[in-house]
Image: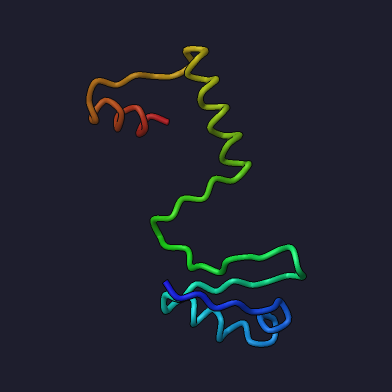
Length: 86
């Protein structure tokens, strides 16, 4: 994969161009100062981003299951009937 390095100033001045370049498959690395860099990459529909909020929700779900506070269904129809009743 081809890589294009740009400074933060260059990126700010021509953002649309760099977004288009990334959309066309080239990796764009944005350098911020001497020590920090970022990669501009398109997010696809099937990409999965784990946020702190999502991690908290997953922890809550694990605790709920651990406490036995969940319902089990043997069939899809049972689950759909339960959802309809809510």
